[in-house]
Length: 241
Length: 241
Image (cartoon, rainbow over all chains, first blue to last red; front, side, top):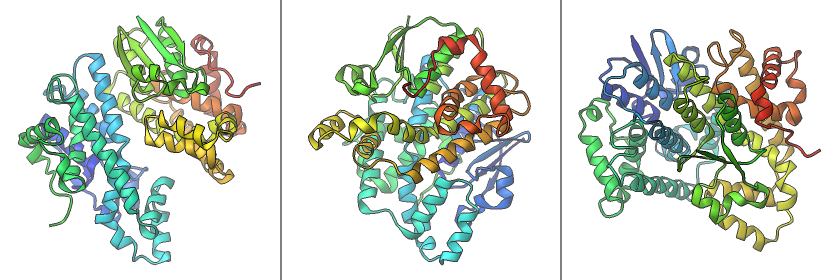
């Protein structure tokens, strides 16, 4: 019995949904409304004291961190493997996931602009203090303070965009031998990159995910979207229409 | 044939040396002098384009990231296993390593004070620009700029110290069932914590690694230091005598 507490637009949630769908594992999805700060609610903190999304619950045991969850799923359900067999390739896969994880702040800079900045900037000091109180980590308290009172500058957004384009450069290089990031098959490293490329292609730097600029990434992105699991994972537009 | 490019005082290098020694794997250690910025030299960047330490080279194949390297070693040499067998415990182990990795910046704040700040603050603007040019990542360029021109404040050090003490709190809780961080045996999660506890105990918050404050951590730390591999890994004082 698998429950996934997730949000449709959270990159980490998108990875785990895609992994579950690629492996054909049935699950009970429970949507957490991040706009309403449900992930900082007392109910959710009981499930996940760090207040992060997603949380997978398998036979009552909770697990967080999308990279860890995907490896756990592949370990527990070995059919349709999403990891290379050779230890060295497996290590390269893990380093790819780590590398992409390390770029998440650059996506978050864009999240605020589109979503929470407008709302948060209208909170009174009292409302803001009340919301901050429920956020478990100091880092994320700081992010919220930032978005409510000191929005990211154009320069910060440009720098974030440049780092995300550098991810495409690095992918382009790794995709050369086989068309996949690691070894000769689709793996959790590719899954880790999907929510990032989705956002880059949709809004952050659309002209970089093209045959002209990054031909292998563009072909990879077409191949990813053509997989039946991609549609089932519901990795839709980030921006409201 | 294993080569390890490492530095005696680098936390990530200490983890990998401890893992190699625990597993009884022979290796050829090559010391990289970080004080002389050898990790940003053209020679080292050929080995590791990211300019990070350590790099393991096994039969000619290079690998970085201490957590990834330790899992790779355990996967390739299954004797004296350092990972739990059950997938859920394995996932918890990986999340422990990730959690500790996420705290590295708090250690680095203390590194600067003791080592490079004095040197870096005396560089001329030209010398500084020359050194920054060779640093592959923008983040680490920023750190160097920071240490050379805007040293960390007392408030920043206090905040870093508090986060490292919170690590001890979290360890105390996890050590309760078995005396080890995950499951019932010593694992790579414990290895990941060792360089942090070493620094906390030596200089950052010595009175927290005590029977009074964190009794299970204190007992764990005694047990770790009593292991023969600990001495062989040469995890000595961070501060010069």
